[in-house]
Amino acid sequence: MQPEWWIPPKAFWTTLITNTKYLSGLLTLDHSLKKHGSKYPLVALYTDTFPEEGHHALDIRKIPKKRVKYLLPSVHKDFSNDQRFYDCWSKLTPFSLIEYERVVQLDSDMLVLQNMDELMDIVLDPPSSEDNSGSRVFAAGHACVCNPLKKPHYPKNWIPENCAFTSQHNDADSAQTEGASSTAGLGMPNGGLQVVNPSKNLYDQILHSLTSSSKVENYEFADQSLLSDLFWGRWVPLPYTYNALKTLRWEGVHSPIWRDERVKNIHYILSPKPWDEKLGEESNETHTWWLKANEERIADEKGSGISDGF
Image (cartoon, rainbow, N blue to C red; front, side, top):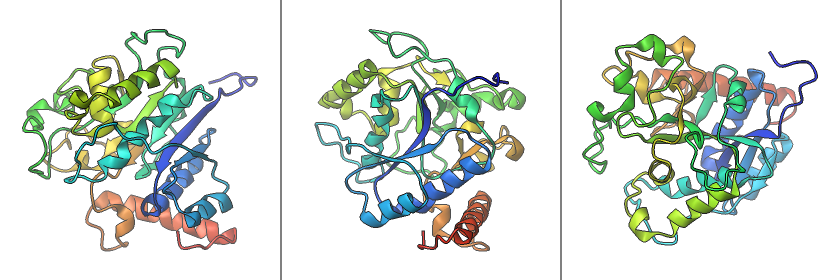
């Protein structure tokens, strides 16, 4: 419990938005944060590709927004097999937001199921560190490297035996509150949720990596590959409950550790997205959770006179 006189630091949730395809996801994410009592606002980080109707949707809902540059490496990296990764470089932007003391970056295809404001208080290396050589550079959950859809273009070492979550199957109770070591499995963070103390030094290191052709060529998963390479073993692993990739719940993936009631934030990775489906026709049981939350949001908005189709 914080004392009554405690004043929250300059801390924010942020989410990247480049087009309206993810806008209903962003709006429902914002709704879910508020529903579960977060005392921190969500700021939409938009690029110049974000259209006018999207801006109007944010403005009438009074969702704060901030323009950011569309971030790309100085050399071209081919993501034709997964074009979503072209947008992912810009998810590194929160490291540059030095006007904030703490940023928790969320993907717009997430749904908050429980309050998780405690992420704003996780101890990380101070941004004033000159060489940023500490062991708590940022916090994140692990990427799942099981490749359950057997995508042929994924690296050959993306197999269950190399997944950090697999190492927790024999201790499901601990998996609810502790992440596997940052070097477990392939040691790669998932970029969907990042807890960051913005720092010019850190961001300069990131930009330097984006100018190295030899490095960029090896970054098969954009932002999360870069973070894994640049800060290997120096990040704080969060339990799966804060970035609960929907595929973890599937039988044969990481169902041994998944518990519905412990999940604080579910991440709807891969296609289809829940907003591409209808209630009663869902391809995934967890999509029902989002669809019901979205219906609740729309009903609340209509009560406030907002009805723009998003």
